[in-house]
Image (cartoon, rainbow, N blue to C red):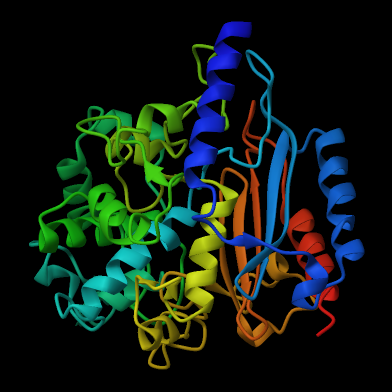
Length: 412
């Protein structure tokens, strides 16, 4: 065990050294108009959650105006079967935060390139994809790309693991897409309501792959993560070649553990989400990205800068503006932006102090979250593995409390 730990530590040191200077610069909070003493209140919030066994550990980053003003690691990244200390470099299974930083950013590039349009019908790209039919009138309304991105398509939220296993064998992505396209219910007329659905983003994944001829994991790696020079962000496909470079094996050793499986071992560098893991083999539109706090800080800085950081552009400024807007042609009941949550949908995540009209973000089932307040260019990144060793605990209050601490620390 001691030798294994020393190898892991060496890998962390090497990769950290390689990435030094490529992430955001670290600044004293006071140099960015923030109260550093107030930010240290985050320590007690996280440590209390660890003491209550809500989470085994966490990494928190606060970004303000292109600088990291707070970055701390707490507790452990693994407690079963061995205990491994959390570090600032630890990678986390982002779960549904993958929808934003992987699928959405990639898909918005397709729109920029003229390869797809928000108003395009889904069945233009997925032959046989069933649209909405009104059960009373028999009238049909098409489901569009925008409906998928805003979770207003009417597709049911999920396919349970037991249901999937009863219908398919492991790693049958084509069969999974066929099932979504033709068999799962559509609950309402597109654009009139919202229902959060992982199936929306699996559908977006399949559209991207048809248009580009590449796996989502490969496209996102090449066109988003590598462009921003992120060294600790990747998918870990269970089948085929890894999405990342030769450092994939080392990165896998740096991942926080998630839920313990039936064999008594936790998942490490294998996506926790059952459909992403069993149906799509880790290359999935709804989950599958692994990243750390510093890399996510770079992504947030780029987006708060209008799509670019240090000369590396992933999206145009007008595209970012559009992405963060609630589409005006959707019913007011649909308060989601394109691939991102707004305050109107989940006010608790961003607390009560930030400007509610300028907050966007997303949460992940495993215990991850991003909140960006666009006026002040402030981001709050909370990474935990709350599903380790068991799937227990709620982070709603913790996320809101930390957001309030950060917002109240802004002095200019």
